[in-house]
Length: 296
Length: 234
Image 1 (cartoon, rainbow over the protein chains, first blue to last red):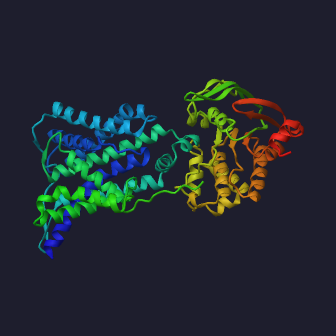
Image 2: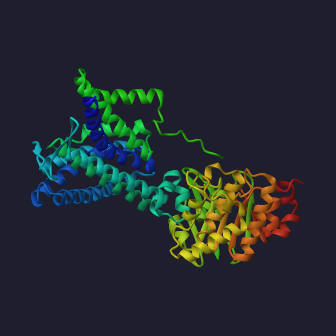
Image 3: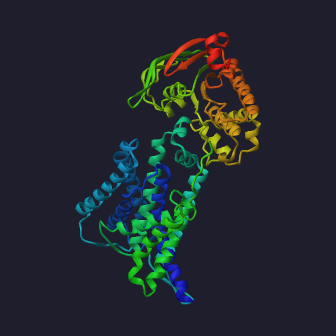
């Protein structure tokens, strides 16, 4: 029993990170209907920004950790906004396929650019947050895991608040439903889209730092696998659906951890893609997704 | 208030408007009638910046051809598009809030909301309802209400009678006249239902395959034999 709970805790903490990355995919999809494949590399840049912030900020302190988070969020938000502005916006009137291929191009650019700027060899990520192990009736919980839960929960609530209760969030939903009608009420679609990229990228930055705190070896290609899995999580929950992305991430993290703890652990990475194939076969709209029927 | 001069629109190689000119004077209701595919919707989309155009669109003397639609809203122009295009995923209240997107003055927004509810009480009852679940007529009311929330001086309505129960059509046209008279909002109305459109408007244009073939006071157009046989069913 205690081993079961231990796996659940580990799974939740991995899943929360997938959830943070999945939100960026799902928000961009919700508004522009394409998959921003460069998102996983923004996650990588977030980790590196945490690494560089660690050169200046104190280690193993809440202040240093939060400082690193804020710095990485800012840099990634700006990066996300610039990517949209210069790579995707000029193609917005074109076909979705063009943008999709461009996204893959941006992804390669960030990975190779990362190799050039940060160096190709793996770096060890500093311990930014204070670290402690707690034991609850035989279950080990690290302060890092608690941090992941708390940070993800706070960010999810904040995001839901923005999307459901604020004017810019309502505008995001309006643009996502019908960009033309949105422009006719005075919404500048470009501003709303930039905002969406900024928020999604900032969340990826948090994901990058938390992920690296748990797996402290970072390199410019580190984003690919977690990014793909987060994409699976977004599809699993229902692409375009924010609570769905969070749910999909957590579900996938738990499934993966259980497979990893079983004798099929060799297949840990394969399981995510098996989930993707199954969901596409049996419930293509995802768990919380709906296929829209428009009333005429 | 609005002067369109030699307006041309192309969809790729196909020309949809071959240089039309029309004028809407302040405080007026002007209608643009014509058959399906004549270019009525294209004309409104061209004016509100949704389409790339050639020619001049003078709004209060300023050329606004090819200005982005969201900027025109700030100049007091509102466009209720064909098919209503309410935000079906938002509530009625949120749709109205989005209509007031550029308004900063909270009291003015409250005042406008009260006005919208006074002409469409149905919307007040359904504030919390998701707009996609409203009937066609209610969605039309919401689309007009949303446009009014932007405090327009000039309102363009595209086929407000389309797909709506006949009894509601009458109500909606009465409200259109009321909006014009009480708020002093200038209206350009596009309609397939020529009878109704010529009844509420003061001046009319007849559009046929991208050309304006007739223009006159609405009263005269109703007596015009050509209009009678082609658009008024006898």
